[in-house]
Image (cartoon, rainbow, N blue to C red; front, top):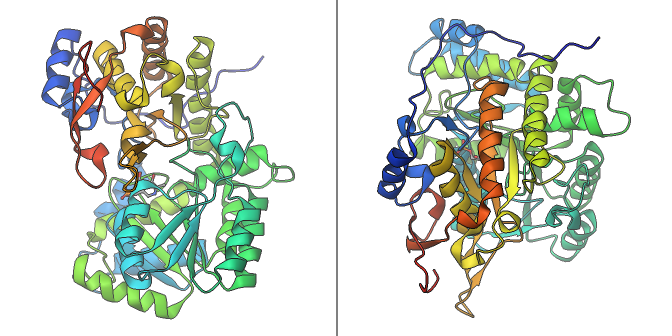
Length: 464
Ligand SMILES: Cc1ncc(COP(=O)(O)O)c(C=O)c1O
């Protein structure tokens, strides 16, 4: 007899969910300019907008936070955090910062200059924005399977090694940085294999190009390596991680995802000159190098998470819950991007809403309709987030994938919550013609997904 899996934790504090009606939600969404990000949290019943900063903290994290040292400089909390991070990452320089994009910003300002080239499997939106603002040319080099929604490649996050080798040989002087985003959030939360990491590290070493990780979801990536890569099944996720860290020159990491924190980030690197340049920038914009704009208690919380995030039972439950959620959606005919990763389930917006042209943002419009129907908040990783106006042709260039993202906060929702969310999306899929297209009424020049506003397309309307 096999027993059903259960959460490897129990609840001690609970937070009530405010129930809403479809009529109330229609008003809330209109007020938010049809941008789910602008909804108030109390207007949402199940919040799958992000897995970032939304984790439930453990008893050990709270206990450590109560024992923090809040001295302005040289605090014991920093020393404890830095020692734990150094031991895990294996790099001498540990620099805390308040979240992932702060780390990206510091790195960009400290080491990138106009004309530099940054290569990556895929840069996350804020990373690209920070690097481009520093004048760098950013080139994503995903493998072909990452762009094919029908492909079941187990490591769609891999960097295209032939293209990387080609770039490095042709532009060796200009390539300032190579980044592997683990897992690749922008293209569906897909993992990078250990074999790909090893090969990329070898190529980078041969050409003298520093290899860094965007390590926001490195623990989930290492768990998926253990699950999917030949010869890795017997290794603990943390063992895989130690090898991964040994292959790179540095990393920047939002500690709000796998790092199980409500705030926080970290940069870890080998190069003393880069570390010094980053610390100098940090003094200008974040705080002091032994705090990075964080309180001592935040550093304690991050320290405990460096250990907790690699717990095999935690990762097994989390990945299992995501898979079960995806199976319910797939069984109901929802076009889910496969294979399913760990932190989120992604739905192909164009396949779900074939009646909507790209200009009416299929995945974004689906996100709005889903909230109206169910009170579940999701988010887009597609035409609004990654669409670019071509300055030469004056026409929009749409990304290869227009995805709805259902991100799952860590240690927060049960299978029952996810079953409700799945049932609602399956029902909407059965009536998908009802998903109305949206037209953009306000789009800021950068990171539009956070503040853009929309209105429903009326029949006979022009588009965007
Ligand atoms: C892969 C990746 N990198 C960087 C970031 C930025 O991190 P933060 O939200 O902590 O600024 C995110 C946020 O979602 C992310 O998913």
